[in-house]
Image 1: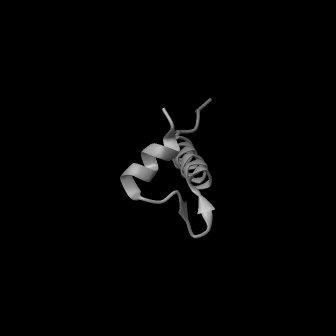
Image 2: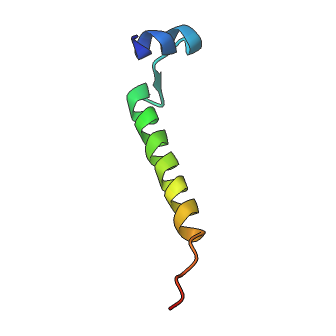
Length: 49
């Protein structure tokens, strides 16, 4: 499956603000990982000895 053709069929363009869709997909994946890590680590309770 070619993601560029699928994206082009759905939205009609493969660039936004001069950057291609690969950049935006990678940026959103990193953002998602950061958000999940923040949720996990901020909700950890400290161990009591």
